[in-house]
Length: 102
Image (cartoon, rainbow, N blue to C red; front, top):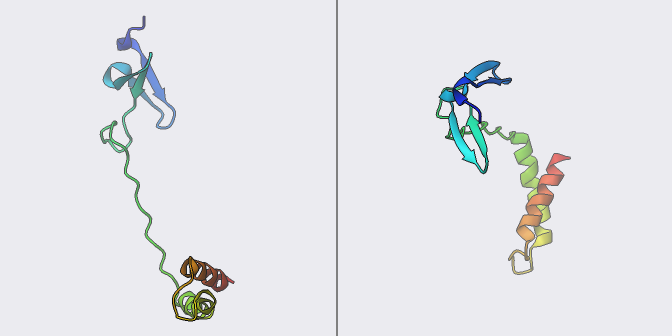
């Protein structure tokens, strides 16, 4: 039996020492799981929110190339009546993007 009042835990990520009696403890089957405090000072049981990266603005040159290529490719994937073939729109978009990158 281990007395948790005397256990000290080292966190190599932050190079900090923690006393086990001050940490959040949960039972995981037969094992005792200790939760270290977060670096930002938040609640250790709530997940850390991901920060979203700002989207890159597409260049106008790429947009012009894509529009021209899409008009060329679209005729391949349309029927005589002007309706899109099955899965044709998706295929046309993929092909136009591929052609615009080259």
